[in-house]
Structures are given as structure tokens and as C-alpha cells.
Amino acid sequence: MSDDRTTDLVTRLRQVGCASLVDAMGRRHGHRAHLLPMVSPDPGRPLVGPAATITFLPYRDDVEDPPDFAELFYRAVGPQPEGKVLVLSSGGHPDVSHGGGTKLSRVHNHGLAGVASDGRLRDFAELARFDFATWCRGEATRWGGDTVMPHAAGQPVAFAGVCVVPGDYVYLDDSGGVVIPAADVAEVLAEAHRIEVEDSRSTDHIRAERPHAPHRGAR
Image (cartoon, rainbow, N blue to C red; front, side, top):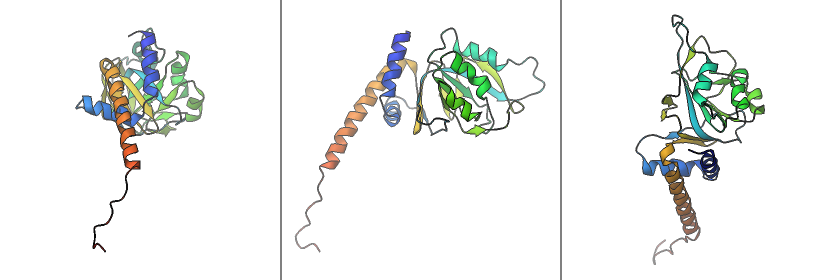
């Protein structure tokens, strides 16, 4: 997909409410696509863009030469990292830190849209100062490298109960989120706009409602 088309899709996704996108996905697909609300050091900053994935696994001390985070980061984002969403799959440990300001400064350096983790992240104050959006399970203070380890990049991952495939469009704001297949994003956007028009008409109809006059003899 061209950079211009990606930028256009991101702009259009930002103009549609999260709930409308979730409803549109529900009309087009039978699988779960919605994400429950997450936490951000800057909750007024939504996160939108195509996914680049890193998988974490529970830590094992007998695994020889495991890949480090930097290696997997560059493998995940590829030669055109700008505007992508780094998706960190927690490996079954949502309450453990999966990164912090130092490690995730790469997201800023390479112009990604942001990072989404279904685990915790450290250094919220530092992350809030970067030029990207951050959403996760919450802030952590303790290092998590003795509990989880980065394992693979560029593979489908489980993320907060949703399957995320590299290239899927991820949308997160303070109300929750949604994961949209790249091949379907234009159709989902069109359906979301139809839903918003329907909702607007329904609101106008409800505004015009009047209580029914009581029947004769009614007390």
C-alpha cells in the first residue's frame, strides 16, 4: 500500500468514532475485533496506523542466544517504519513491564505512530514527551526481563483477546479500540460512516418524540 493511501486512511479513521468502527467490523466480520479500554500516559492522543508486531514469551534461562528487542524491532517495522503501530504481545503476562522510555525511544526516532502493548510499560512521564501515542495495560516500575522475553517479529499475535496480523489497522483511544484487516479498511470506513448517519437520524427521531396522550378514562 502506498504511503499516500496509508496517510489518507489514517486521516479518515481519525475522523470516525471508535464505536462506529467497532460496529462496522461487527457487520462485516464474525470474529472479535474490539479492544477494551487501555491506559495511556497521554489519553487525549489516539493511536492509528498499520501494525508491526513483536511477540513476547515467558522467560526461560536455558534458551540460547535469544533475539534482543532491537533486532526484533527493526525486523518488525521494516524499511518504512513511519506511521506504523508497534504492537507488543504480552506472552501471557499482562501485568509485567514489556518496555520503557529507553527501549521505546526507537519508536520516536523512526517516526512510528506509536506503541500498543497488552502488557505494562515503564516511564510514563518520558513516554508522554515523545512524538508518538502509547497505549497499554498500565504503568510498571519493575523491569520485566526475568519474566518475559522478546521472541519473534512480523507474525500474527494475540493482543488483548484479538488476533492482530501485521499490516492490520489498529485504532486506540480512551474509549477502547479496534483492529481492522488491511484489505477491508476502506469498506469498514464506509460502513462506519453509514452507521454514523443512521445514528444521527435516530437521534433526530428521538428528539422529535412526544409522550402519547393518555387514553380516556385513564387515571
